[in-house]
Length: 335
Ligand code: SF4
Ligand code: SF4
Image (cartoon, rainbow, N blue to C red; front, top):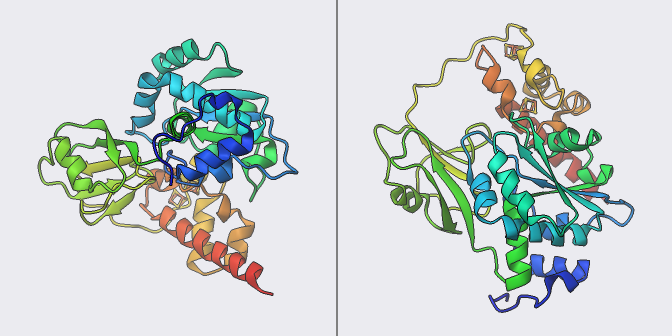
């Protein structure tokens, strides 16, 4: 078991496999919200040449500011962790993408990046700039192919909080037992970012922020666009908990038939046709849904947010993605 004394004296002398091993032992996962095992992401397939490591400093959703705070408070750990990640994937350069409303974070990080092959790039502030495929396109103009991964275009993406955790794991042997969480929304008395131990009940985090105010009727874990609504605050903070939001909102508007306005198509960052995909999925036309790119949906919620008919498009897309992926897994498991 990893203890806090297992750190390397000189982390930069370690081989890629030694870095991955320490990351694996520390139980690090992607802290942007996806919680994908980081050691796996740092192990590109042998036939994929990685030339660029991208560090994602674009907050994954509106309202969340935990990544921003970490860039301001832990710039050295982020830059050093990014360098270890770059060595692990064998990239020749590191690009750090930050939205242009966080110029102070960009300046602080650049003060610490002198001795490393890391360049900071300011990007337009827009949602979902922090989505992996969008970020790769914004920085490199490379499109991840349909059904593909960043590996396919020579890129690995890591979140700023994740590379900070990589540095702490490799240099000090620190396991991932805590994470930064944004506690916010108009139902929280003192919104703020906190460090929370994994397993802390959400209720404890909310109490630490002054408790709830007014008639809160919506609790969301994650961000306002992609987060998951909860029944209660009994749920624990897990490694993927980027935010806890509490809201006083009016009842959701009733759903109406699609009026073919095409706004969902116009706003989809993946170039999909959400209205058509939702129809395929409602009628269980899985093959057509896959052909029309259902698996490329990043569940950003833009289509549903903009839909004047209030159609729960993301619900249908999640359902479709789940069904198609399960069917594919079943097929590949067959002898
Ligand atoms: S949630 Fe909607 S807008 Fe976002 S990628 Fe999926 S289909 Fe496109
Ligand atoms: S935005 Fe809503 S109403 Fe307009 S085309 Fe898309 S699903 Fe239909």
